[in-house]
Each structure stands twice: as C-alpha cells, then as structure tokens.
Length: 501
Ligand SMILES: NC(=O)C1=CN([C@@H]2O[C@H](COP(=O)(O)OP(=O)(O)OC[C@H]3O[C@@H](n4cnc5c(N)ncnc54)[C@H](O)[C@@H]3O)[C@@H](O)[C@H]2O)[C@@H](O)CC1
Ligand SMILES: Nc1ncnc2c1ncn2[C@@H]1O[C@H](COP(=O)(O)OP(=O)(O)O)[C@@H](O)[C@H]1O
Ligand SMILES: [K+]
Image (cartoon, rainbow, N blue to C red; front, side):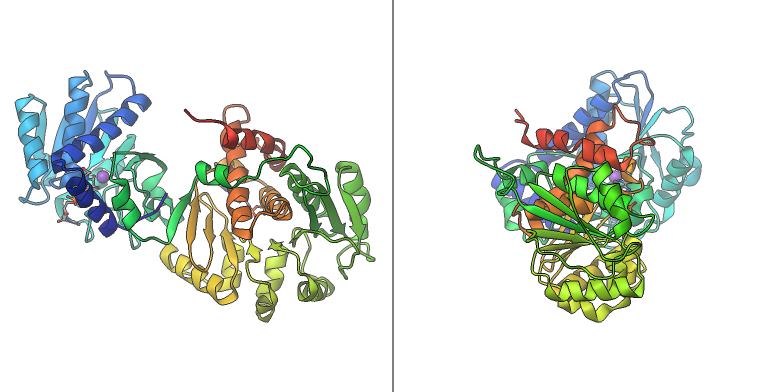
C-alpha cells in the first residue's frame, strides 16, 4: 500500500469524486461510515457518553456525520464545534444543518470559557483538523486540544490526530489513543517522534478510486501480508536440505554465545536446509548442546573471533551478533568482507566495527543488508534532530554505499536507495534481549533460500513481528522472550499463507 503526502491525498479525493461521478458529500459519508463501523466494533457500549469535537473543515464534516450515525444507532453523543474560523467548508456546513435538524445536542466553541467540562464523557472523538493542516495550531483550537490532552480520556482521532503534520515535525497535537485513518497510510503516523500523538493506528478503506491512487508516484509504502504472501516460494515435494539453502552465522565471544545460538536457530526455523555457526572455541559445546541441528566451525582462538576461515560454501552469511570489538576481531571482519561473495546481513558488533572503520563500508557488495537499531544507526550516519532528517540521512547512506538498511523500531523501516518500506507487524513484546539476533537469523535464513536481499529483509521483518502479534493472547508481552519468536515462526508462516475470504 502506497504512503502518500497530504497533497497527493487531496488529489486522490478529488479524482475519486470526478471519476466515480459522486458528490463530495458522498465520499464524506463513506469515510464517516468507515470510521463509525470501526468505532462501534471497538466501543459497543451505547450508554458511554461520547463527545465529538468537529472543526469547520472536512475533518469536522466527517465528525458531524459520525455524530449523526452514532446518534441514529442509539449512542449517547454530543457535539462540540470548534469554530477556529468563520469559514466552514460546504460539506461541513451542510452537516451542521443536518445535526440541527436531527436534534443532536451541540455547542459552538469560540472562546476558552465555552469549552465544555470533559469529565462527564467516557470517550472523545477528534475531528478538529485532518490532512488539511497547513500551519501550527493556535488560538481556540490549540486551547481545546490542550484540554483534550489534559482530560486523560480515550481519544479516537478521525483520519489523523488533529495538529499532526504529515510532512514535517509536529510539536503540538492531539494525543490520540487510537487513530482511524482513511485508506491511505501517512508516514507521520508511523514515526517514533510522533508516538505521543498517534498510538494505535487502524487503516479503514473508504472506496477511493484505485486508478487515482495508482496515478500517484510514491517511493514509500507499507509492507503488507499480501506482498509477503506473493513472494514466498512453494515448498517442493522433492526438496531436500541441499536445495533449501545453507546459512552461515558468524559471531559470538566469551559470554555472548547465546546470540549466535538464537540467530542460528532462527535461520533454520525460517526454512533453510542447513545452518552452520562460526564461533570462537568457547562457543562450540554451547552450540552443539543448545542447538544440535546446527553445524559448528570454531575459530582457532577460544574467547573471540580472530580469523574467519572455512571450506563450506554458504548461500548467505549473517555476521556480527555478540562478536565484540577487539582489534583482532575487527581485523578478521575486515579480511572477511574483502573476500566474501555470499549475500550478507550485518548486525550488532558488525555494524559497530563498520562505524569505527567507515572506509570499509565501500567494500560491501551492493544490497548488503544492515540491521541497526537507532543507536547503531547514529554511529553509522551521525546524529539527527528529528525523524525526517534521520530518514533523509539513511536514504543518502543507502544510496552512497548501495545498501539495504533495516532500521529497527516499533515500526521497522526498510530503506533502500530507491524506496522506503514501513513494517507494521510487531508489538512491545519484541523489546527483549536477543530479539534483534533472531531477526538477523531469520533474514540470513531467507537470503540462503534464494530470496533477494529486499525480499529477505521485508519478509524477515514482517515474520519476526507477526510472531509477537499472533501470540499476544497467550504469552503476556512482558514475559515474551526471543526464543518465543523462533518457536512461533511456523505460526507466522501459517498466518501468511492462510486464505482470507
Ligand atoms: N476532500 C475530501 O473529499 C474528503 C476529505 N475527508 C476528510 O477531510 C479532511 C481534510 O479536510 P480539509 O482539507 O477540509 O482540511 P481540515 O479539515 O484538515 O482543515 C480545515 C482547514 O483549516 C485550515 N487550517 C489549516 N491549518 C490550520 C490551522 N493551524 N489553524 C486554523 N486553520 C487551519 C485550512 O484552510 C484547512 O483546509 C481529511 O483529513 C478527512 O478527514 C474525508 O471526508 C474524505 C473525503
Ligand atoms: N515496541 C516495539 N514494537 C515492535 N517491535 C519492537 C519494539 N521494540 C523492539 N522491537 C523489535 O525488536 C527487535 C530488537 O532488536 P535489537 O534492539 O537489536 O535487540 P537485541 O540487541 O536485544 O537483539 C527489532 O527487530 C525491533 O524492531
Ligand atoms: K482529526
């Protein structure tokens, strides 16, 4: 699904109206109905008092139609029109007349003293500003937003939290507890800087014209189940371990062998036929005991890697987990990347070694996958002030060295020289030791099976997150550990392959 800018969304809305020959009011109704369906599913108790804040633009118009729908189905709703301007859009003005005609209780707010007491409401719906926001919020709208944020009530935002800019940093907006956004994903909803505003985001279709969306060029999109489903290869009847790829995981040091165990197990569970771990001597018996399915090659040194040599021919290599930064290990890493020709994933200390020796970056073959968390990224590309700058710098970095950067986070971003992908699977359950090592293993396993680096990065990140989503009802997120990701990878595959009516 493409991520578009507010200008593009405006064009798609207008084109939908034109191409489908429908009045704009009809599109507003569709949008409001989509919001209503989701809202009533989430909050079925009709007795809970709901206050709907509506601005004077089309986001406000949506809010008024939502009020009408909720009122009609017996919800206890009141409307607060935040009159930040005298200039109502036509569709909004039309719906103000409708709520009057339908006797829905409403008040207009132009000054602070007119803002209603919020304590009597269980739920607030935010329809003050949507994608039309063009400048910082001020005046009465800002005061109302402040009150909403201070109320501590659940706030469900229509389309976007009011005040959120779609293309630049936001410093003040509604703190939504849930955002129900219309059909087109917006990048701002997935950025960590905006976490206080967006919280849970749900996308609902509103019947926008498909060709109108197709016409809009974008180098940003969401990674979706259907994309991953389409790229997964069938498992052939005559498959054998030799046809399923051989993954090599290189890493570990005294006290950090667990990272290689996790990555190797994850690689095998991702479906590759063979996995070898390359570890310092202290890791051999650990691996052979903890994970008998793996083969092990040991470094001549006991405590850390000093020289990476082997006679096997792996189809993919994952390097860096638990490896440490000792000078001998850095030297071994350097010699290895000079001669390795297999597709490669670099994580953890592998990334830290590259940050200390930036000139080695140009030795990496095109499409090498780097999987930094934000701290590791900052060591590679330098600090950033805000998310848009971070993304810009990451794209420039990916372009310069022709790399794929998997920037891990609540929403992991996959950055290639040409495109930015946003992954939405995963929960805070994944914020646990070794979770990144598992991701490295999964991506290495997929690369070994012959998936392209982009496919491996996308499907690896998607599968990794999906394991947490699927176990949310059984394993409490607080007690979910990295091994649970590995144990549930099969379930994630089932989920992706499941037919959806
Ligand atoms: N255009 C359409 O056909 C559709 C629009 N929809 C809704 O309409 C929204 C966009 O509506 P609008 O384009 O009317 O814009 P908004 O309702 O987001 O904002 C209203 C107007 O406020 C003004 N404004 C911007 N920033 C301001 C500020 N800081 N202080 C005061 N005024 C400010 C602008 O003139 C803007 O157009 C979407 O988010 C969505 O909720 C949906 O109804 C679907 C169809
Ligand atoms: N709140 C969250 N929501 C979704 N995914 C998360 C969250 N926190 C962490 N993750 C995921 O967990 C993994 C953590 O990786 P990393 O920080 O390298 O951990 P470690 O170093 O312990 O292995 C990443 O894939 C990241 O995207
Ligand atoms: K809104």
